[in-house]
Amino acid sequence: MANQAYEFYFRRKYFMSTVYIETSVVSYLRNNPTAAIDSVTRQQITRTWWNNDRHRYELFTSQYVVDECRSGNAASAAERLEYLTLLPLLSLKIEIDQLAGEILSRAILPNHAMLDALHIACAAVHRVDYLLTWNRKHIANPIILPRVFRTLQDFGLPFPIICTPRDMMEEINDEPSE
Image 1 (cartoon, rainbow, N blue to C red):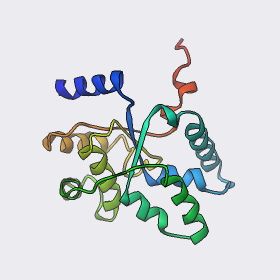
Image 2 (image 1 turned 180 degrees about the vertical axis):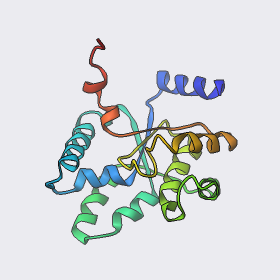
Image 3 (image 1 turned 30 degrees about the horizontal axis):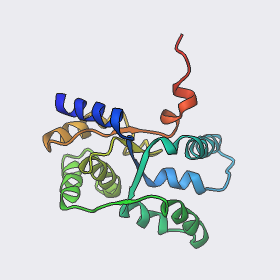
Image 4 (image 1 turned 135 degrees about the horizontal axis):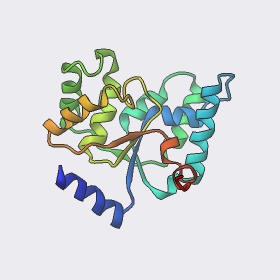
């Protein structure tokens, strides 16, 4: 655990922090405005983070995200994929499949959430600092995260900080505390 904290501190001090961009972030970048207030807010926050703050980080994604973004309406998919052309893809390793399988076998996530387990596993295996997502059901869920982190610890892997674009917006996080 101490080595993980030192590794994070060293990378943060001397290199740009790394961020894994998950599918929901790309979807909110592209989506057309909607009537739902929470969706509109997420779209605005995501676009603001993308335009103002992403340059502070080294961004990555995976083939899992590319494959998810290809689905649905062809025009919308093309727009989502356009954002992804800017991002390097993390390699797919057997350890990712093994870790995702373990997350499912421990019933941390339901079997139908395999892609969500693969996102978590990909970020962890590649030792990415942050996993950026709006998926609060299966990824950024404070109820399941302790179990996910125990599983990563069992595999000897560091824990990516799992958060939303709002959590990483500079103007929000640099406000003086009272």
